[in-house]
Structures are given as structure tokens and as C-alpha cells.
Image (cartoon, rainbow, N blue to C red):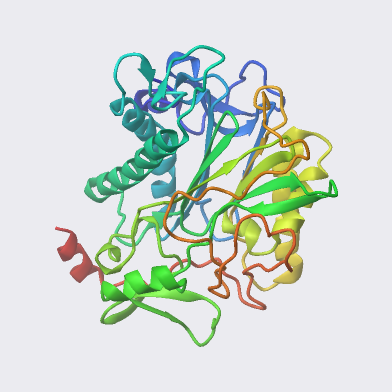
Length: 424
């Protein structure tokens, strides 16, 4: 078993400790050794990856990120995640999820160990056969990973509710995790952080493909679930384009996302911690994946983000370059607003460590993305369908509000006496 830092490792090293790691392309990397030689990275660069975060002007940086090399003890398998905390203790929730989710995923994959002669890590429920025989049963592979992600997310959220050291009543975090295994990407999304793929189209032009949906409360499926649980969804007059979740009988807390870790004051009213899952079959045309918190997406479109990453002089500078551009845009576009925290993870798929045997149909094209959840990809602004693969063909839209900063995920705290009594 491996692929993440154990809790003891984190305590001994300290999440903020900085030390030199062999083979780093950029200094000041934070990493720790893991079981079976795997390594979890909290910032910095590592050949095929670039990570950077910058605190905004609201106080403590509530963004967190992680990269796990050789996840599950399988060489070349990578797990990365990005987390955007909100509420008074959002930074603690984001850090807790960052530190524990990879380990939780690893445990669930191990618990799914198939009969002897099969392997759960690497080739999930794949029979060990000869080189010339088919190795992957796609349905079993994705179902196993789907179950592991779903169970790990929901179990970790339940543990957060019982954790007395972190007040999660009105604090929580988003999460976007991407696992690359061979030519497959598996994406788990919770909240409104985002993952975007940079790929080449038929004319060899670099275009973005959005891999996740911003899970806003006004999406039809999300709103239906929230309303059925007696939660309310509406936008304030001063921010008509931003819908929030509210308690049944009180105009609070006004959470601006439909799924999250934590935020237990809303868990009985439609907020869930079940991730939306999807997958993508990689080809040689796919160049990099970008995970970023909404401090990036509120001011830059998918196209601008992909263009910025591709313009970096070196891969190690890509995440930092993107964050700096977003911060400059915040200051010029919204001079009276506080700049949000920004965090970025870039994974470069054509690096020798990751690019082995990517499939191609001869023209570099692939079929449509395979979605594992029953929900369709929908636009957070219009509620209409937006199939993966058309991002580069349609007019760019993003969710920044003219003259209004979207940095506040919560509007108002509930009356704590009643909420605390509920928790007990």
C-alpha cells in the first residue's frame, strides 16, 4: 500500500517544512517520502508538474493542493488535487482534506483487492495476462475507481463531522482530484474549482476542454435535490448571477456551491459530499491538465488559462506564471475588490514519465469523454448541456461578475447556539 503521506509523516515533517528533494526542477519544493517509494508533494515543481499558490487579500490562504507520484505504488500513476476552503476555518478543512484524502483513496482501493492473480493497484480488477492478451476490462476498471473515489469522499466527510478539532459547521472546502493511469484520466469534482485540459485540435491549434462542471446551486439537478431537502436556492439582489444555498427558515449561510466537504449546517438541506465523476481517454494530442481554484477562473477564461500555461518558458514556471497573471487581472478588472487566494497545479502529459504509449487513431482524434456519473455536463450560467470537447469551439464564458467580487463563498453565519445544539 502506498501513494500518500501517512499522518505520522505529516506530523513529523510538518506541512509547511521546506527541504530539498532529489531531482527537483525548482527549489523550495515541499514533499515527503511515502510508502513503497511514492511521494506526496504540496508545492514546487517536479519535471512533469508545476504547483503554485498565492495568498489573496482576505487573510489566511485557504487554498491547498497535493500531488502524489506513483500513486498506489504504481510507477507513472499520478494523483493530484486542489482544494479551496471557505468559512472561518476553511483553511483547516482544506488542509485536512489534502492530508487525508489520498490515503483514504489508497485504503479503499486496497480493500477492493480482487481474487489472487489480479491486482487492485495499477490495473484495477485486471487479470494478469500475457503481453499479447488484452489487459484492461474497462467497465470493471472504471467502476472500481468510481466506487473508491465516492466512498473515500463520503467517508472523509463523515469523519470531518466527528472531528472536534475543526469546526466544520459553517466551514468547508471544494475538491477537484485528477488521477492519471496510463492513457486514462479519472476526474472527481466537488464544488466550483475546475480542471481543464489543454489539447490540439484538427488544425493543431491549442484549445481548452473543460473536464469538470462548476457545481453551482442553480444547476437543475443540484437545485432539485436541494429543494427536495427543504433547502432554498436564490440569488441576492446585489449579485443576481450568483445563486446560493440557504437554510429553510433563515437567510444564511448563503453557500455559493452545491457540493462540498464540511458545511454541516447545510448537510440536511441538500448539500452533499458525493463527487461528480467523469473520465477522459488521452491521446498524443493532449498536452497538459490544469487544476485551479476559482481565484483563477473568476478572472480568466479557459482559453486564457491554457494560453498562459503554454507560454511559460519552462514547465516549472507555468503555475506561478498563471497565478501572477490572475492576480494582475484581479487588480485591474476589480480595483475595489479583494484579490482571492489562487492555487494552480499543472500536469504535463507529454513528459517522458507520463507519456508512454498514448493512443492515437492516426489523426490524433479521440471519441467523446466517457462520463461515469449519470449527470450530464451543464453550463453553470445557462443550465444547458455542454458536452466535453466543444469548449474550444464555442464562445468563451466565465463566471466573474462585473463590478462584484465572487470571493465570498458564505454570506452570513447562522445563529451558532441553534447550530451547535444541532451538532451535539
